[in-house]
Length: 110
Length: 345
Image (cartoon, rainbow over the protein chains, first blue to last red):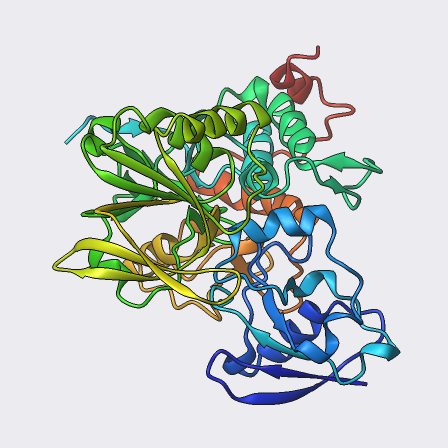
């Protein structure tokens, strides 16, 4: 299982993914050794900071569980929010999302 | 220079670990002064997730960030710590047998021991990721209101949808020449009452509401003259104005704590302060780091680890504060001495 992540520098990376992990955690794990996909994610997934904001590739948007009201509220503290914006801590990896493509949004720099 | 406060231990950061350090130090007769950039205790627990339940505090199956903070404040009450809220630790200097800490508000504290319990760093306003925005900060771009008069007669844009944005919109509408509230969607998480006040001001033509994302700033020499906005349909528009107040919440920045470490030649490791696991002391003698801000092999960023670190730190701090006294290890369950300090005897 894997996800494709476009870093803030525009480069695309394929990251190994694990079922049940939050997409934020997958990115964070790889970001520790690769600054191009380093992610701030400062609240650690408690939906309290909006620093794991990603744009989801159009082909994948409808495959995700829709954002909760809390996630929509929290995105008020993100920048350059688009229709395909999500907080990556709220996307849980499963088989259907194998190959998921996301782009790190501005404001996720550690 | 202001007269220095004298105490036994200076604690930088009043989050859960800084607060529990007051307890462990207090049992060993050490008084503390705490400095925190926030206006209340609790750090991340109070600022980022006051209502969120925490499940991994020993013996508390479920507790919210705010409840944990309140309980710690109750637990440390007997030790009469002094709090300096809303102040940032700015300068740390070595003095004879200790430290002198100066805050950005000019408060000076001297103590034989200093403990950095700064978590993820200092809470600072989130800045829009716009290239060159620094050039305008403090002149025409602001993240807080110090004096309302500063905005009199301005063509002001307030960005954000939470309580700060809406409160200041309602308060500054009569002060500014023109006021526009800018938010990414036509729905607000601020208190409903304030939101309806804002809607009324819009209906009365006393302000404008624009739904779009802020994407760029136009201006020169620190003075903005317009904001570039991107609408939901990706079309772009310019919004003329001379002042921007942006409220996108807070984020933790290592900056100020990194500065303090640099002043004592402490080399950070991935933005964390290396310590030993016996005393949690940094490479600078008498300077400790506990909680999320420190690093050692096997480190886990858990509140309970920070509590443990506070207890061991206090053992060593005692030896600096009372070099001539022998440390007597006692239990709160059985020691009338400790029970006396706790005021339960």
